Amino acid sequence: MTGRSLRTARLTLDPVSWRDMDDIARLKADGGAFAMMLGGVRNRQQAEAEMASDVACWAKHGAGMFAVRENGKLVGITGVHERPDGRGMALRFSIYPWAGGRGLAREAAAAALRQAHASGLRRVIAIARETNIASRKVLGGIGMHVVDQFDRDGHEMLVFESVSSSADI
Image (cartoon, rainbow, N blue to C red; front, top):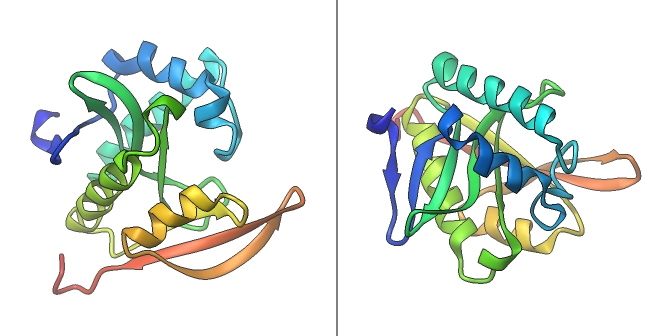
């Protein structure tokens, strides 16, 4: 799927594939990187099930999750997936804590959001805990706006949205 690969100033984003499984399983097992994600930290079996879903998403929508690398080293993931709660196609991102603080999440998420809209997805949402200031800054910084909120397991969740006009696609 190299035709769907993206490059930014510092990063390479490649659609996730089974070749990435070991790297992505380690990322998803890292509490610092994945504790706040829907479903939390994953074991290997859960990460493999998600990989199958992520690969299928690319086939169905022409958009999906990317492995994010800096200088060839996996620093995180970003992209869109179908929300299991039926809210729609959602942008998500996660980077290792050691890679944080340099704007990599914002750079990667912005590229993934542009690709999602370019693939024909008019509306993309993202969900973040109200207390997750870092994620809220990334989402606001790439132009997403809060449009709704809900409670999940005692946490106030914010729903962000990006809508592309048909002229943008």
